[in-house]
Length: 378
Image (cartoon, rainbow, N blue to C red; front, side):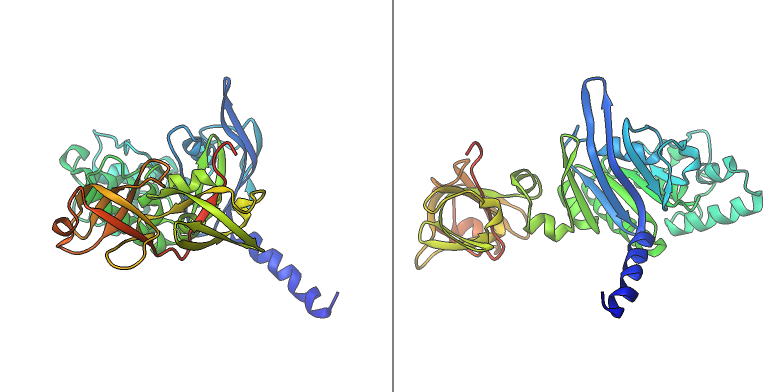
């Protein structure tokens, strides 16, 4: 080993260790015959916003409750801030949690709700008052300390719940679908505010949601879950553009599945034919497939375009169009589509008049990061 290697190796190990805020190692949990979590391992880095994304019943809330200490795993270990907490009760874990229902005390003022955790920790009254004021200022509720929860809007109640979770200065902030009760516009505004506060404080955050757009917009990394397991862990861009399997590709974002043909595999790249078009895709998901075999090509709506002049990859008939303000969604009946229909997004105010339902169009590919899989059951 070189002198340089002897010096650098310990530094890398220490850095990785110090960056770990939450670690789950081989964690499993059952409820009767139902397996909620199946041998899950996950590392959450200090200061990052990690999102647990998946359909209902996938195990994401169970994982959150295990980190919080509301549940004890059947197998495996949990560590927070490099300390084993597997059997440690919730009140000793220094966790801040914000529930979907907010769970505010209706008979208490905003200030009393926010300061409740500090009061239970027997902090001095002067310190509680100061930290409550700071927390309310942080969530833009200064001046509302004396109000009751019923006197607040839904967005304001959510801010109170967030302030209550943050005022104790938690090692980890846990958020269980906190935006689900808000209308769309308010939800978007609160997502921006939460992200700003989280980065400002640098608090490690685990966020649970089934909303893909919410996960993509908020997260530093996303763990996509189903059936009690993590199917893929990565950045939003990796999850969206480089899904590891059919489930992740289908669950995260809109996607079109088209029947195509494998032409050849050249090392890490495979060439796929769709009509007259040729597309390069990663070869690993097509392991075992032979040249000439049928494969499923996954393409996002933005990877398809209307071809008015010149050769097109495939052709179809517009079945419906949905005006979305900044763009128009075109639903096109296509023989090559697994579902019989594909979704395209086109911009322009004249799109609705230019391509009415019943119009036959050509479809071209603008795929720079397409992916393909062997058909299900193959």
